[in-house]
Image (tube, rainbow, N blue to C red; front, side, top):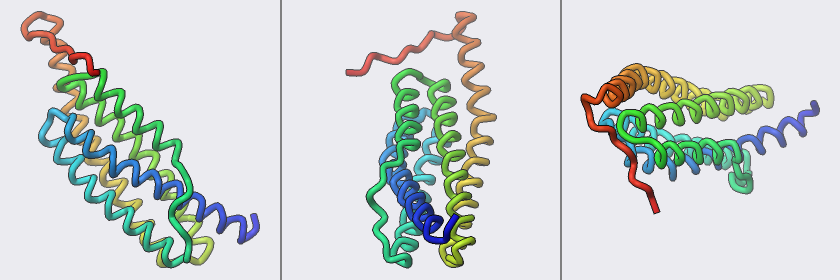
Length: 180
């Protein structure tokens, strides 16, 4: 691959992830609001602040490249965000929280893959400052994923226990009200 072609791909991928991060800035408050677990809600709120920092880092990279960050729609993140919305509409209680964690884990996997690729491109292109910023964001995404795993270990058990109680009749069965 020619250097110019790799640089074009690099910029295109940066635009894609920039759009993805901005989609998350809009989606994370909705996920936080929907969470029934205070710990999960706080996790989403913390990730929102972190995501805003990721947007700022990307803007710095674009400024250094003398490129505009806009012009690309991340369809992958759009689909992941849509799945998160479906969880909110279809689940309730601990099952909702388990579903939100599942959706968030998918997002983190997507971001880890994207940041890993663009960091590699930055290194190959000699964009050392950008590579360092992307490495920092990649590390934060991995840490967020690990936090989600720890939350899932607790919340998934609670969701399973809630279902067991509902099936045995010892707890009233909860259903989401239809949304208009």
